[in-house]
Length: 418
Image (cartoon, rainbow, N blue to C red):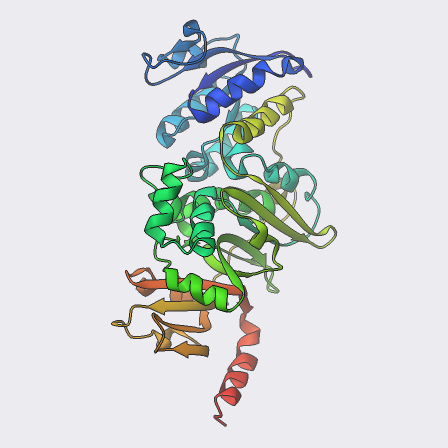
């Protein structure tokens, strides 16, 4: 594609994001990009656009030689995979917002980009208006990343904010989120952590060159968090967030997971409230930087799609520099986590999983303990997923293996055991 050539777009999907993009393009004529055709699933639905734009025949877009860019913003991941893979094979550049499809088919999509030489951009898939992928690709391309942490799901962040600030229980906060349009009628992808882990698997590729299927990344959602957990957090001056985290360890490998965490009030992520997203990147040269913005919505997501479309004017492609130009890193399970676990009073506290214990309270509204346990205790067991159990990581939760003997000694001394 020639630099600054006019872009002719075939758009799949005209929901919140698709219509938002349509409106944005109308307001940015200098971009020299126009939508020629829109493929939709329900042709009879009334839409705020000329009827001649719409079709249900995807081949009219995928096989049209005048359409040089396919933009895909639909909700069905397998249909999105068929659209994106066909478009690339047909010599078209692609912009996608489908994090589930991208994360589940990432190795195939990498291969297709290599085979076809076409560009696949997906900034909108991770944090909507926050340009985190482009920054990882360009600004941090040669920097040494110590860690990356983020709130990447607005629905769960809204629910947790309301639980903490308004003292609503989980169910009441979820209903409020649905009423305000921040959560779907079926919220399981959000509240169980799947949406966040899909996004995190994409960011791992750009941050560390790690290609990991989302199901291989440890995940916990917020659906088991109890109002009493928020009360404990308030007592300790902590907030609760669903945090996606990756940290390079001293052994050169990366610890990564998506889990609820307590965060201190001076943590940048504590300032991320309601439906907003935030990402903190710590690097060897740039030190710590904080990205903040709306993680969902018509115009915020549309703005990210627009940025990708604009980049196609000058033939921009992801180079996946941490994978192809550096030595890609590997995930590891050789580390420990500092965690809080609360249980119904009928369930015994699972002390046997912990290397050290710092607190245990059996007379509280819900029994809870705080201690250090091996990552493998979560990876291999499902006790922490059972009903009535909340598991929330403490601030700075990652502890490397070489620190454990010292912490064990300190724990015994505090307990008065010689």
